[in-house]
Length: 408
Image (cartoon, rainbow, N blue to C red; front, side):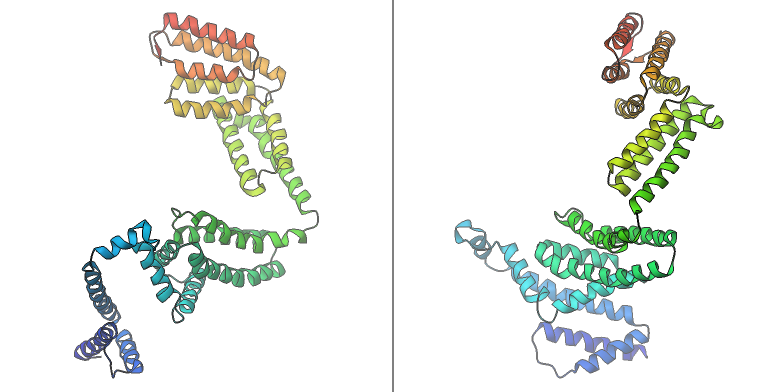
C-alpha cells in the first residue's frame, strides 16, 4: 500500500469516528471502513491506525469532559445534598454508565465473550494484554459486586469448567497418578498466579472471588476424584507415616548430621516448619496427620545428645545476639522442640542449659550481655520446667548483673 493511500484511508476512518461522536449522518459504509482498516493492518500500518483512533477518541472525550466541567455548579451540589435523596453525582454517573454502556444489549454479550476469549487464549499459551484484563476487572469491581460477578466472575468460572472438566477426565483415563498430580499442581499454580494478577486485592470482595475461582479448579481436578481411590486417605496416611519415619529420624541419627550440634538443631527446626506447612496447606491441619508428625518428631528430639544440642543452639544464638524480634522468633521455635522432650531428657536439658548459661556470663565479663533475651528465655522456660530450675536461672542472672554491664 502506498503511504499516500494509507493516509487517505486513515483520514476516512478518523472522519467516520468524528461523525459518530458528532451524531452527523454519513454515507460511509461499515464494510468500506472495515476493508480500509483491514488493508492498513495487512500492510503494516496497524500501529498508525491504532494511535490515530486513540487520538481521535481522546480528543472527543476531552471535549466531553470540558462540557461537563462547564455545567452549573449547582447541579452536583444539588445531587450531593442528602435532603434530596438522590444518588450522588459520582454514583449517578457510574450507574448510568453501567445501564447504558456496560449492560447495553450490544455490549454486554460481547464483553462477556471477550473476557472468556482472553482467558482461554492465555491458558492456551498465547500472550494477552494483562493490564487490559486487570483494568477491566477493576472497573467492573468499582461498579459493585453484582456487576463484577455477572460480567467477569461467572464467565471466568464457566470457561474454567469447560476447560478443566474434559482435561481432568482425559488425564484420569490416559495417565498415571504421578503425572496427573503434576499437571494438577501446575494448573493450580498457573491459575493462582493468573487470577491474582487480574484482580486488585485491595477491593473488599477480591480475596473471596479469587478463592471461589480457584475452588472451581480444585473441585474439578481433585475433589471429584477422591472417591475413585479406595481407602485413599488411609493410603496417604501410610505413605506419610513411612516418609516421616525415615526422613525425620535421620535428622538426629545420621552420623554426618550430628557432627555439628548447631546445624543439626537448625535442620530439625527447618524440617519441622516445612512439615507444618505441608499439613496446613495440603491436609487442612488434619489432626491424624498432625499427631503422626508429632510422634516422629518426638522420637527425633529425644534421640541421644539432642537435648544437649538444643541447649548449645540456644547458647549460640544468645552469644551472637540479634535484635529483639529475631531472638523472639528463634526462641519460640526452639520452645516447640523443648516441649517434645521426655521428662528424663528435660533433666539433661536443665543440666546443660545451666552450664551453658554460666559459661555465657563468665565469658561476658567486661562486655555487654543481651539481658532482654536471657530474661525472655527464662520466662518461656517457666511454662515447661520446675520452679526450682527457673529460680536458679534467675539467681544466676541476678549475680551476673552485679559483675557485668547488662544491655537492655
